[in-house]
Image 1 (cartoon, helix red, strand yellow):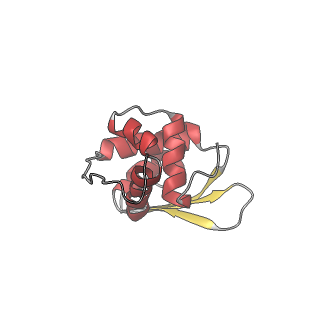
Image 2 (cartoon, rainbow, N blue to C red; image 1 turned 90 degrees about the horizontal axis):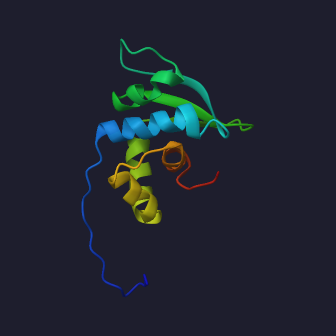
Length: 125
């Protein structure tokens, strides 16, 4: 039971860039196509643009612009949004976060991760 008076342990967790790359690839190639569409990307010099390289663009300091299907507002995926997504996952969705720590990656985990990075909540699926 989690109450306001319950004592909790806070800890730091290490999530590798390879884990983030895997989740982003799972999301963009498999898990999030039903709600998310690619708009454009800007990346460090030498990196090609396109959603197939989105994970590397983000992890190397660039940005990928996505949009919810049927919506006009752009959503920015960058290093800062990845950190926010991981923090939201750890706090609001600890069972999902546990799967990430165990490196149990699949399209569903990737999709949830992308939603948390961009929307700060699970809105789809």
